[in-house]
Length: 620
Image (tube, rainbow, N blue to C red; front, top):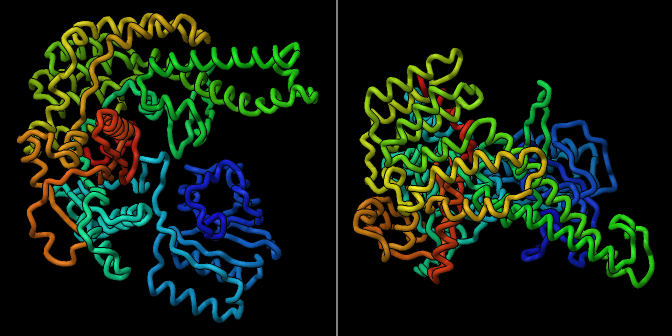
């Protein structure tokens, strides 16, 4: 699109011009398309694509009559009206119109008639439906950025018409992502909830597409992926859980949105915000985002040492007194050395950014005592976890972590059967904090009371059944006291000093990784030959749709078919913890010779804090 819809598939738009002659252009966006683009491209990337200016469609824009304009906007009447007005005003030399999603027939005809009246239709050179109404932050992670879907579906006041409208909105966003992937999936949907509504509407949209495009109807399962549609109620606990994964911690403690990390810090009573962009070429994030936090600290230390060694070698070979002096030298013998400077400088910038993020995380971990909550959630099958939680709740006077205490209690409540007197004691403790909102707790209690938790026990008990090794469980206390006493000592600014020996001990003591409920379901659907009967009984009940079969697929018994690729989509909100758990399973399976690939998406990717706020609205 940024190259005027010339196919540049396989080229790297962030690396340069790919040998193409540059055409300078203006990019006109609206709020939706801004969010779509901002997660994957920065201003410098746009410049490499010939975009000298980007602007918002409903702002006052100066005319540039000699410059072509690329419009990337939602297909709305107001946007069409504005484009026609720009055409009348000769604002740009030529117009390349791109809509985020499909423009319906009525609007297309209205657009055509309005353009015809201007007498300047020759200036409009392209009109494209781009099917891009979703936000991608990583190659295997996307969001429709539709908030409050869970609360809307769960609210008794929501009407049938509203439910249909919501399901259609979700199905449309999913449809766009599937068209982008370029293949028609088999759809498997959790029955009896929002995902069933979405599946029905999506199935019909894809059937219409197959008919209108004469898409091949051959049953080639080896080339098709499976779309697994799930309801958020499958595992509510995942939305509140604490994690030790670097990406999950960043999203939990700070704000991680559209590949931007926002750090909120407080010094001398004053709050300040600092933003860091996660560039697609951020080598440290790409390698470490899915690793446990201590590993990321260790790797940051290694990267810094490697940088210093490389800088020292360059300085020595260049005959300069210091690394900074190299930049001014123009001797031919130094040219090779000087050529390495930009890459090395960019590397150092990324290392410094992550050092700052890791240090800020350590400060927050210490301030909130987050390790204790993670430890409790890792050992829920042990009754001692209740007494440990009560101890933290009653002896810790820290009010900065009240929300973390509530989250851990919600995880306990959702995944284990707690004694009534324990629940009462915890609620009384929360009630002592005047002004602290526990509406979310009211909703979760009602949710558990009213629900029979119809999914199989394997889904529920993924948390309760501790799959850690005996020695890991026995030593978990040592792990967290070690973290608290030693890792926190690094917050004086010397982040990596003395980390090496500590990290090696932490790696040995970290609990075994566990498959979450969503991963159990996806694994069973994608690899039924290696699944147990108990899991198969659950997934055999999942609805089956094949949009390529024009008639009769609904009545067929789902075929237990292995899949190499899947898109897993949660209606009602997703989180980084599930995403990382799925990627971990897929990577492990692939490393063992059973190739699997999983893309994770949701109506909205939430931080635990954001989802708590949404749940609170249902508390009454």
